Image (cartoon, rainbow, N blue to C red):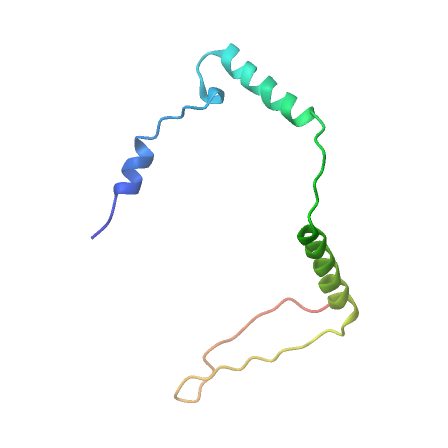
Length: 93
């Protein structure tokens, strides 16, 4: 059984954004308002959690750069003893 209610809702979707208007002046006015909002400088409020996230990301990246490369061998066998998976990876640099 397929549920087509979401597709039906999508088919009945009516865009109410001024950017979807048929009137050019309405669309241009909406674009001007968006650009004005983007150009207006706003004070940046950084939280401690933002700083912690940056520190953790940089730490993880640095750790990956410093640690030696790891090679992983994967062998998967079927119940009959034959190889079940074969991986083709690009050659290492």
